[in-house]
Length: 137
Image (cartoon, rainbow, N blue to C red; front, side, top):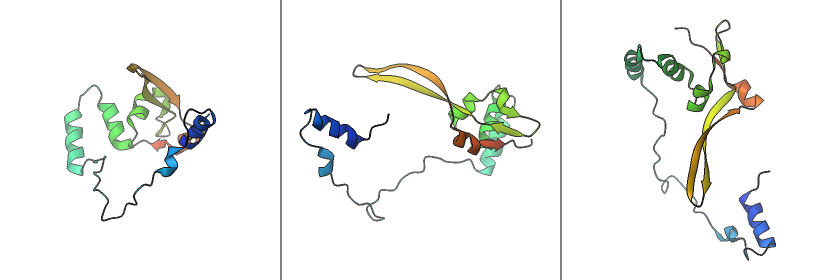
């Protein structure tokens, strides 16, 4: 069950933990082109010369296949690390992306706990959208 912040705050008012929902008093400033701070792009894709250099440098590396799959497919890190040989159809030349690997840490007042790796299945819609055609090398 997911609760929105507003729903959670309403419950706190009902149980007399807080007196008023404070979020209604907050007015967020409107952002326009003059006041907006420039945002740096988080993704910096390789240029064609950089791609060629990358391919040259990873030749013979134990993870060469993984790096090439990442370069040509655009898969996220968790999706790449969750792939198994059963997910790759060599006859029809596609990769079936049906799960992702994530690291989850328990959080408490004392700090973060032990990090666990979890494997979660993608929803059917995500799975349908993530069927990738394998490039021919």
